[in-house]
Image 1 (cartoon, rainbow, N blue to C red):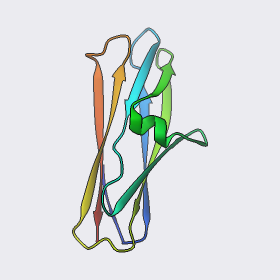
Image 2 (cartoon, one colour):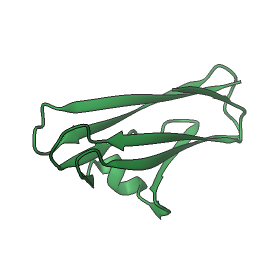
Image 3 (cartoon, rainbow, N blue to C red):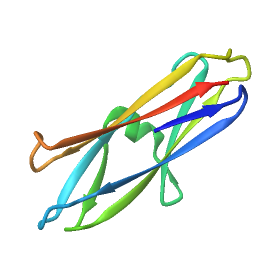
Length: 111
């Protein structure tokens, strides 16, 4: 997922986690942290979960065919220069089968 943003603005990526299995699972989520010129925040269901996602301690219980949304917001510094970018991987790992992972990358490019 890629989005362009102006200095001083924010971009929100909506990430949907889903369980395609026929049994329930708990998924651990790990996101990227801030980088020079950018600040990352995470939320789900109205709750601010940034610290737990960035530390890898955020878990989601997903029923069979269950879904959960995660909002990843990237704020671009007012002083960010055109061409600067941040690629933020968000990795979900099954706690029942740690070999089962999925990673999405959200990229913000400064215009």
